[in-house]
Length: 601
View 1: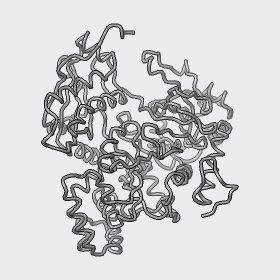
View 2: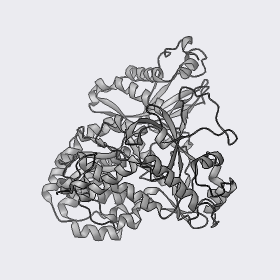
View 3: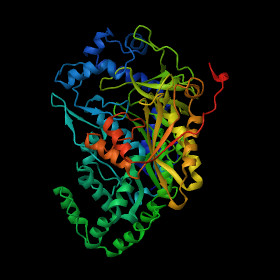
View 4: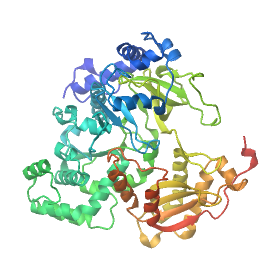
């Protein structure tokens, strides 16, 4: 389609006029990032000037940055939890926001170990929809022809709960999928899904997954991209296909729907689309019955151009498995968001996962950045009496790491999200960030403190020893075992071995334990070598499918299937018992890791 040259974008030639306007909007926002931020803060403070929270800190109606920073404290969830609880319990006064709180968005249950309630207001849906509307115009710059087919996206809702006052509490994606923004979205040839709304909105995860997979198989030649929220969700879908393909093939062969699908809306929809297709059923049996599932995604969906999944942060460990099942298709990370706020998007979505950077959109909220000094973990914290000096969005420095702090339209003020970001560059005057990790310590036995990124790196380094055996770590978690004296780290591994006749030996897995220890920080290694306050690291190999059971258990306890992430550290007794009941072998580090006193600081 010809596009008016006046709407061309520095990002590249737009695919259509609608895309041109979206790309132009990105340019306008990022060119004027600081001015947009100033306006956003003024809007938030002026509309909420009479709220109890802002009046408590005597802001006096001021909307400028200087007064705001001098009077409003930097907070964590615990600081604002009493106000949130009052709203949840039914207090309708203007506590945090002048606009009524429409619902609570629940954060991922595995982020910092608890499910937090994030207040939101109706207009936030418009803001989220705006960010979603920018994703495909950017993707179309890199992948042409996406209007010629469909996307197979595995999307799910969670059954919502209500607070004592009756306000809904649910994950942000459930809120979005149940909104009219999603359910009655206008037709867009670039955003056609194989999954019908009836399947996405079905609260039963088996029925939802089954029909989404069935629809994706029926339209397999039209599928141009596969996606889920997290990489783990897409792998769960592949695992589902492994377990259920005979039933799916039978439905396709006969043109009738599995009797386990009982949702009336789903059955009505599927009755209209299903017809016998013996040829497709035979093809499925031929492909899915093979022992080797390498490249199964492109074998079944041959026109797939990329996978749309989050593979940054802790999700990076899924990359080898995704590559195995997809034959190395590009992995696109398109946006950066959380329950608290939607932040920005990746302007180069087809880059390597290790190079993903997100451009913060300055219209989404007011952003500040707390300088993070990973090399100085003993630096004192700050209090309300000694506030830190936060950096504005336009003033961050390339190469430095920061903790993200947000002020939102919905009533969070100078709230520490807990994400650590590294500045990689700028698009116009808007910074671009690489997601480093969540700010939390995973494992500690003594004076050691091991965080998620360190553990991830140690697992990656150790798993290199498995490469010659065509074996990879598909899933892992950890546990600080303090029942032994001294205590020691326990790492649970689920392995994928492509050739069972060439699986890694006991000795190789013992060496993996030592390789992990060599990859951990100097404080850990000092505890092991000099202080003897930590015992040898242990790897417990669990049966295939164990982490699938772990997810099922979490979902049965109320976790969101969309937001579920395997916890990188576990200490909940039922989960520990489940893992330990599935252990097939245990391995210990055979030696001490390297450590010398010169590394002391």
